[in-house]
Image (cartoon, rainbow, N blue to C red; front, side):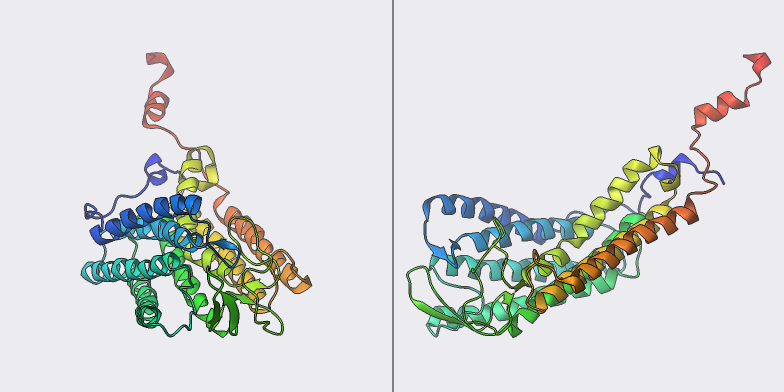
Length: 347
C-alpha cells in the first residue's frame, strides 16, 4: 500500500471557512479582560471566601470561558449544515455566558457567594433567577451545537473526530455540574463574617457535614482534599475538546516521522482511543467524587477504574497499530520518484 504526501496534510474543507463568530470573539475579549482584572484585584483586595480570594472564582470562570469561547468561535468557521442554527446557538452561549459571569463578578465585589446563595436580599434574589436561567442556556446551546455537528465532517477526519468527542464530553461536563445541587446544604460566612446558608456545594462527603467546601484544599485550584469535589470532573469534561484537538494536531505533526500515522484513518482511529480513554477518566473521577472521595485519596475501586482506563489506552493503541502499522510504505516525494524513474545510463 502506498501513501502519498497529500494524505498527511490536513484536508481542506469543501468551501472557504466563514469569518470567526463575532459574538464568541467578543466574549473571548471580555473574559480576557476580566481575567486580567481579577488577577489585579487579587493583589489589592484581601477579602476571602472559603479561605480563598473573592476574586479567584471570577478568575477561574474567565480563563475557562476564554478557552471555550475561542474554541467555539474557531469551530463554527468551518462550513457545515445548519450554520444558521449553530450561529444563533453560539450567540446564545456568548450572551448567557457573559450574563452569568457578570453575576459572579458582582457577587465577588459584594464579598458574597454566587453559587447556591440563599440570601433573600433583592440583588441576590434577582441575580439568582438570572443565573439559574443562564446555566441551562449555556448547556442547551452547547448541546444543540454538539448534536448538529456530531454527524458532519467539518475538517479532516482526525480533527473532526476530536471535535465530535470533545463536544460530547463538554456536554457531559456541563451536565455533571447539575449534580452538585444534590450535595446537601452548607453553612458558611461571607467576606465580612456574616453567616450564609448555601443550598448546596461542590463537595460530596459522607454524612454531608454543614462545612465542606474550603476545608482542606489543593494549591491554586482549591479543589477539596477531604471530600469528593465534583468540580474536577466538571473541569475535565469542559476542556476535553481542546485537549483532543491538540492531540489530533500533534499526531499530524508526528505523521511525517512515524510511518503508521501517515494515513488519516490511522490517526482518526487513535483519536477515538484517546477519546474513549478520556471519557473513562472523566467517568471514574466523577464517580469518585459522588462517593465522597478526594481525588488524591483513591480507594481500591477507584484505582481499579484508573487501571481499566489505562488498559483501554494501551490495548486500543496496540490495536490501531496492529491494523494500520503493517504494510505502510514510506512517503516518497515527487522528486525522489522522478530520480528513481531516470535510467542510470542517462544520468
